[in-house]
Image (cartoon, rainbow, N blue to C red; front, side, top):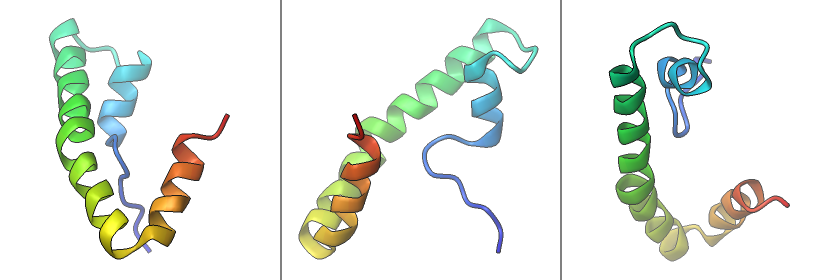
Length: 67
């Protein structure tokens, strides 16, 4: 089974961690894309889970809110 991304792509992981030797603009774009996903797509996903699959929302909270 192919690995899917959660919030950050492999390329964005490299850029955000500093492992990729790229210009600052590309790091800025990676930050912007992740921020947009957090503010838009993730918020919508949480609403859907709250309404239709609270069990999955609880799992998400466990991962995100872990200590």
